[in-house]
Image 1 (tube, helix red, strand yellow):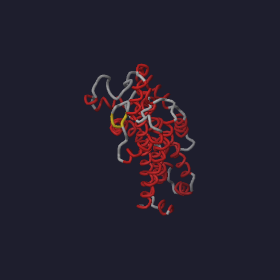
Image 2 (spheres, rainbow, N blue to C red):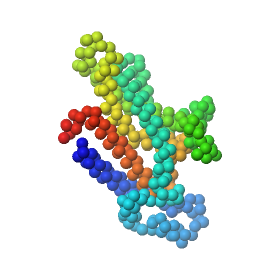
Image 3 (spheres, rainbow, N blue to C red):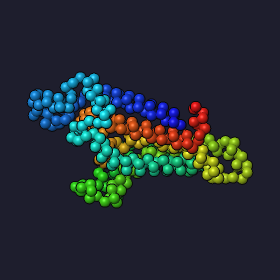
Image 4 (cartoon, one colour):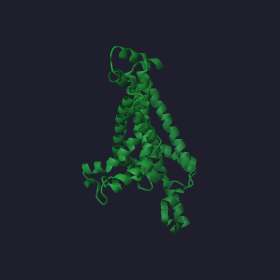
Length: 324
């Protein structure tokens, strides 16, 4: 296990280096000029000399290779750089925004994993029934539904027409963050979490259903049926353990997909999280912030996969023996 963890950590370091290199290359190929994006509407009022001063201050007047080397040296020293648009250290911006996004991501991830697993077990245990057809139809429809479309539909229905949920933001407009109560925060989170959860359920449901269907057609289930066991008994005694490990791995592997969905959800609901900061950094060419978010996202998803693989080996030690 120690050697396996060391190998995975080494591979994680290589993945982060590849992500950093690829992200920097894509940013350099962007048609958006960082200085023009930083100046915004005041671009026409700035003289060429002032533009040169700004470019020198942010290091944009040096070759891309020199910029990348300087950023890597900062990264190795634990410094992610300085955000141009927020005028704060990148680490502080990511920490503050991730603190807000973790409530959205964590809630949606937990609910989608639990609900998706239960629905998959129910559908697989009752293969071919009306319940199975309804659950499968729901999963296939939501799996092909665009995230932003479902978010806009939820806003129109629950916020505009019914008035049950707020239209936007993490709290009431004009209220300081420290003055917003926990109940109010949950009220503002309800619709974004529900939207992201509905989209995250589909893959886990379909995968768990396929595992349950395979179990119900196996010799183990046939032997249990011959002894008088019902489909519910087989699903409860054998199915949960049979389908839990793949569902666990898929749940952790879906962190990247959920993060991608949260970017669109935060834009639709104007939620000030990490996803909205990613869009702002991309549109305004905030290179240090964009690179920092890319690295943090890769680290977040990779650690999730590492946790899933570790739990898999702890629950079923035969996996480690096979790979060794």
